[in-house]
Image (cartoon, rainbow, N blue to C red; front, side, top):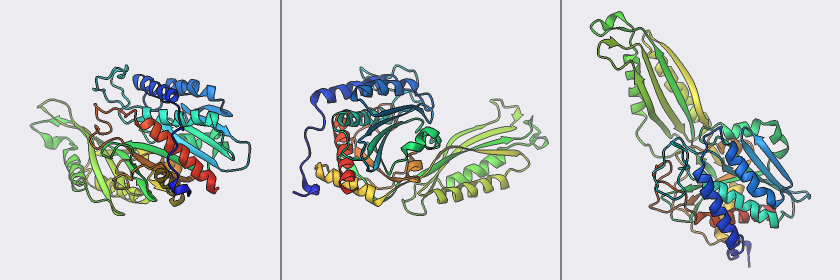
Length: 392
């Protein structure tokens, strides 16, 4: 029987391990932490995985990151699997018994589930050390801001961990439960947030010509964004601008404004396209400043994720071997993922795991990660690892 047609293993996790991972997810869900402040989350995972006797455990990686290493002691590939630590600054409205206990903060993207899956791989590795090479479980900080992956890569502690392969999954509402979407090439878009701060001079509302108002400059900015805000079809020339925040003047009828601020998010399929998009908008904004000073700053920069064809092939073979359906999902994902920083540094595959066609969308207040995905995700990671070790 070929590797492609072997039936799915039913013994990746025991019933008690699945229960423990579900309990872990619920506890993580109750205690969410924002990007850059995930120390307690990392500590919970460290305590959970220490009984698996990892060969090395590195804390404080790129901030609050955690790396858990299982090393065979034999020559072979270094294979990294990643999950995210951070939650979102959005109030939860699920009514769950394990709802967030932190006001205004919740795991509404499924990172609690991703952590549980990666911890499940750790449970499996505790009893099944790799025959060759080593496996690195990276619990990465600050994914939601785009800063975490770069911080990990730039941390001197990571220098000895540079992987040959890196894999990550993201749950995806709208896809059939347990289906898998993966492909070579673009997997998620590049994006960046631009903050525009206008500084003029107030005037009486009856004499606006005696001041310097940012209104005209702001109108030109909004018109440019509007021209690029229609949802275009995905392709090499994909460009999308989204106005996320806008503020001008003070709430009074007698004052012509002096100050204004706008947040605009830009996204493209690749990094070079994003830089060109940024330059286009910045030049337009500067050209219409009309006598007011303008400061432009960059925030939440995400590299595009580009899947290596061989790495994506390992995931695809794992999906087929486990008998999981191919997900109906158009790649690349329009949203951004800071796994893209890793895809620029090594051979990677980011894949998507269906959370159900009618499941609440990511970042919605009523979203919750489906517990049924935990054993499926663990099996996918385990089988992907086996595929890599078979070839390398």
